Length: 142
Image (cartoon, rainbow, N blue to C red; front, side):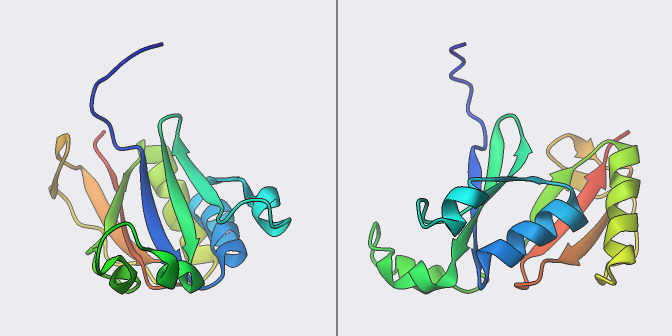
């Protein structure tokens, strides 16, 4: 299939422990790990988690920051310059995510209604942090 429509391919998050981060994203958020076995075997520089068929979140070890030479100052991004990443889910998956986070004592914000996003106003949304302090918003439109 050749489709050259612009899409979001991946987001890279700095994490202290990629294995622990992958575990959090798998068990608490419900995202499938990608290349985790290769990472733990030393065959891949970082693991990822799959958001959907077209997008992943890379879990980049913070220790690699000094090797980021693609742009001047790239290593300085190893903090939290991104405000948040938003995951849009069907309502049942949204509810299941919130329940998994609460079961694991992950602090979550109150649920809000009507916040604007890529598909217009969301029915409901809430925020949470991963173990490295990265902020995520979860929302549903239906």
